[in-house]
Length: 360
Image 1 (cartoon, rainbow, N blue to C red):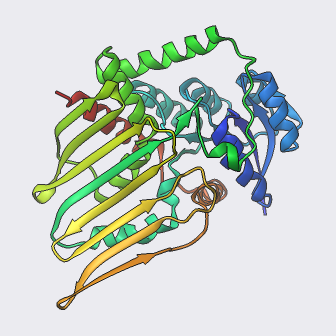
Image 2 (cartoon, rainbow, N blue to C red):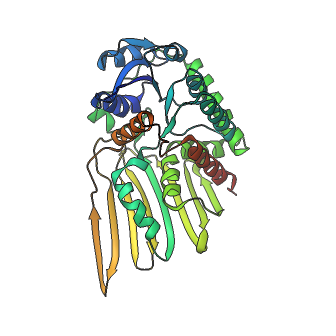
Image 3 (spheres, rainbow, N blue to C red):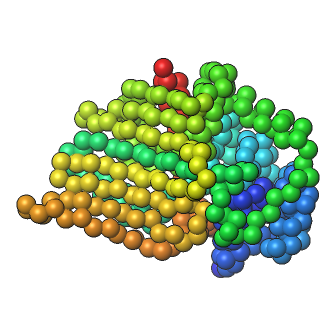
């Protein structure tokens, strides 16, 4: 079996907990040959932990390496790294969100097409076995009355979910200046403001939340039901930390979308995609995405004659992060298009921005 050589750019939580772990686990498919992070202490620590000899703080140095076939872009801001990676002829795995605005998306799409590289967006929930189990059931559900997207998370402290420190050994160092972080934050906030056509802090905060917390929800909603016909209503409140939106789908169906980050001391994760028909309800209930191998549940309620039947399905204990890397491997070696393409992710960015623009 051909092994693909991977360079990882961005060695934060999601890299440490999930991507590097599963790339190492899938050793017949992948070999991590280089890592990069703006924090020298972080990249040295992670390189030592995963046995990676080549360690960089400038991503362009990693892109120049001949023993890198695939680049995992796991940073917060992706556009420059992704475009330069495409120009270097590297296939790209890009964590969500793809970009912050449509102009960035177009730059990336142009670069990937020009240089003939594969681009896959890390929407791991699209590869979740429970979602794959439920997706055809959603499409076959008759007489749909209501779709509901619900995503409420809490328990973030010092940039991390509280329970992660009890489960994993995580590394975060303070060797990057506040000025550098401020410059990066200012750049991304400006890109977000351009996307939604507003510099209002509350709207930018809400858009940032959608790009981070709710971009997965956008992808699974569109994967199951397609695009809405219209955004009827959006309410942003409490400084942009909470949002409720109502979307209209064909046949006069409504989708209610609730998303927010609760400021409480315990870590809660309450996320589901549900659809309600006249005789059947289907809900996909996702666990905390940072807990490896925690199963996603499919809940079904339906009528059997006069009886009401309720059941829960665990489709598999396989991990969605692992499955998406296996899928990307097959796309590259077999020259297939990924399920979560950059073109489709651009449509997610458009819908999320339009939800913000619809706010009163």
